Length: 471
Ligand SMILES: Nc1nc2c(ncn2[C@@H]2O[C@H](COP(=O)(O)OP(=O)(O)O)[C@@H](O)[C@H]2O)c(=O)[nH]1
Ligand SMILES: [Mg+2]
Image (tube, rainbow, N blue to C red):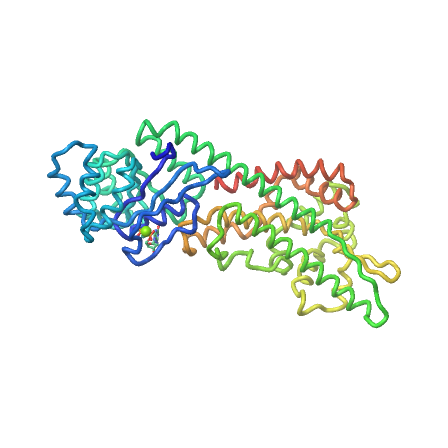
């Protein structure tokens, strides 16, 4: 511990995943991760700052360069225990072949705890045992972390057996898949490696937890703001002589959709940076429904509510909701919702005048003399689709460990399952009813009702976000 900020050096053999583990633990995607062993040659501190205050610090180190000679030197050392590392460094710092070893031992000399990272999918070698023994001799509080790069788990018992002799705690931590809960668990087990660390790590953990709750609260707010600005959005255009009414309407619909899409993008970007993904272009998995445009047919087919759920939400939430009326008029079997999905899917390219105009009213299009108004949205499905897409986006973001720089198969499969349906179709009738009340209040511009519904919807969203984070 330096200046009472718990500090941990991430140590291990080159290319075992040290930097990946650090990146995920510190939620820092600026950490250099490289397939080439020996890229990291300098120690580098990565502070975790919450509310402007540094709460914990992780130090990235180069891998051991000369474990054999280092261990031999240490085994022959005769001086006082607490002088072991400073004496080693003093004796080797002018020797370039020991540069990395001196570097990685420096934070330990300054009081840092040790997180030793190994790739548990390969067998234990002699050199690993030497490195473990060096760390034991330093006397630093230390934990072993198994970050398996491959699927092979046959070597895990061997690793554990060796670790038990050399470390105060052992944890499996997959730097590419670890989520928030697993990060907390790792911090919790760090408490056990040294009694002195316990109180200060307790504080760090509770700061992490409060911070996470705050982010979920903020995410729910952002989603609500998105709903309010998009569903309540209205715009008017005046029909001029030379432009035909049809083309004016088409333009309005296009502008409307562009507006909603842009708002959604802005919101998702804000959510993304809340979870500190700033640098890497975190691509969504190839098969994710989120790859689809907001107004595409597929999106409307796979997300949002089923027809029956929609009718129910609309009728229990206030019979005057447009969606209910439109459904009744069009007939359920006709599937007006898939109709609008299809229509909007063709946005920009395949607009067919008649279809478009027939469905205009679903977006709240009104004609009044020379002017045409579009919005507020009349089809409550838009609300559920926006909700589902934001929740799915959140789920991708929080499951994207910072140490991971691409998508792996296992993750893809998991996401695929989840993306078949959105979240809102699994919500309770009461929750969906509340959405309908919110939607109605927005349309009626009833601010009191809107405020009441928004407060409750915020609670529902936070609960949903927390549930996604626990999955
Ligand atoms: N498949 C897989 N690759 C990993 C994992 N952790 C790290 N890697 C890769 O292994 C290489 C070395 O990782 P890095 O974190 O830079 O290792 P360091 O040299 O110990 O800091 C990089 O190409 C990483 O992408 C993992 O859990 N699974
Ligand atoms: Mg590294």
